[in-house]
Length: 50
Image 1: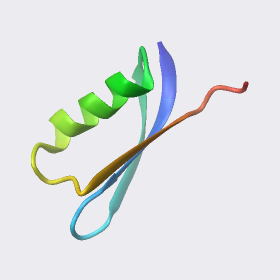
Image 2: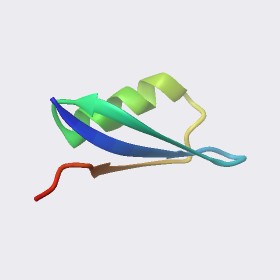
Image 3: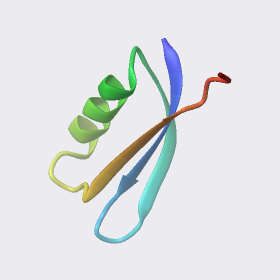
Image 4: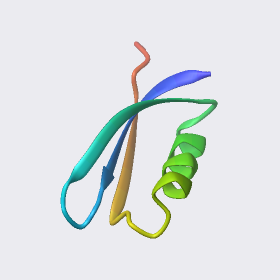
């Protein structure tokens, strides 16, 4: 599991949180499921040091 910063842009304001997931794709899918039809955009960035 890796840690990702997830930003979900809604119609009113961005919602930012950290998430544990196996991949960035999984983190984005989890965010989409969490916010249902509300998101206007989802951005996922790694918290891992490269």
